[in-house]
Structure formats: structure tokens, C-alpha cells
Length: 249
Image (cartoon, rainbow, N blue to C red; front, side):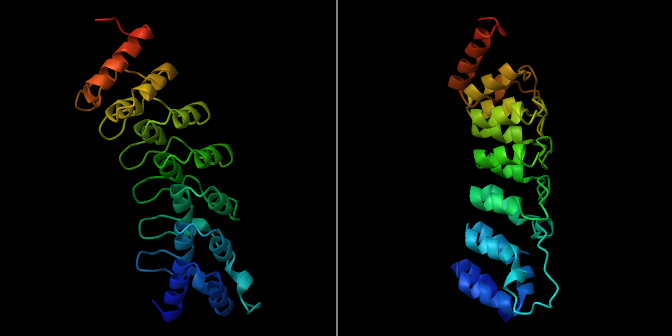
């Protein structure tokens, strides 16, 4: 990495907007430079949640002294690091809504369904970190898919159930129209994940939506077998009895 490239990365890390603008004024292409992890200054500005720097780096040519220089068009989908993360993925994961929307509304618009090397989309990351407003934006404004599996075979619904968020499950099922009984690479459904993490209330919610509570994993384990403990197991069984789906023992 050249000195100028190191300088802009350092300035971003320090949050020094003035130095970043000065460096770009001399060479706007520094915005395209990458570190050893394949990350650009925009990746790091997003990671550090510095909205002003993100705005500057989304439009690097605006700061160039040489107005005859060809304008740099920042296509977020081309800003891929060594793990196939773009700044859009980072914004969804860190959860700063203002920065997320700034990147999401940039032209050209980033692909909400772009996957990282682990097969995860921005949707997966936002759900996993429980960033509800970002999930809502992805669904309603960007029409992001809830049907993309990561390399573990998991949908965003698996993640929502695993973290025990009834609100997240609701929007993914009701607005996103997510399938309920999709199995991951272990043969586990979202319902299995909810009970395995101790979220019997979310498990009941899924059943009320129509999830198949009789489905077993690849190892033949029932939802009761994977439940975190007896307390969760008993609660869920009583809930099924209450719904008329299971006979009381």
C-alpha cells in the first residue's frame, strides 16, 4: 500500500474529515484503494459509523481539484472486501440507520440480496443483530428477499427465531412471506432454533403462523428433543395443549 493509501486509511480511522477531503482533492482514486483485507476507506468509515466520512467517500470526485478527471462512480456492489462484504453489509450489521439509508439510497442502488462469502445477505446480518428498523427498510423499501439461504442453509427467519424476536418474526412472516418450515444444513427449522435457544414464546408464535411442530431434524430429533431445557419443553407442550394441537398427558 502506498503512502497516500495508508494516509487515507489512517485519516478515516482517526475520523479526520479534513485530511480525507485534502487527500481526495489531490487524488480522488484513493477512495478506491484497498487495505490487506480488501477493505476500502468507505468500508472503514461505515464500520466506524462516521456519517460525514461516508457521505464524502460516496462522492469522491466532488473533492477533486482536477475537474477534467473522469468522475468516479461509486458502485457499492463493486466495493467487495476479501470476505465479499460491501459497505452495505457493514451498515446493516452495525445498525446505524442514517448511514444505512445513506448507502441504500446511493445511486447506483446496492443489491439488497448480494451475498458475502458465507452466503449471508444484509438481511441476515440485520436480523442477527436485531436491527428492526433496518430489516423493515430492507423489506418495505428495497423489497429484499427473505428466501435466500446462507451456507448453513439458514434463512433470516432461522436467525429471528434464534434471537427470540417476536417482532422480527412477525415482519418476516407477515410482510416478507417467509416460508416457515425450511430446514437448514442440520435439518432444523426456525421452530427448532427458537426452542434450542430457549424462546418458547417465539416457538408458539411460529406454530400459530402454521409451522410444523412435528417436523424432525436430520438426526431425527423432535422440537422437544432440541429444547434448551425442561422449563422450555414444558412451557411449549402446555402451549400446544392450549392450542388444541396436543393431548394433555
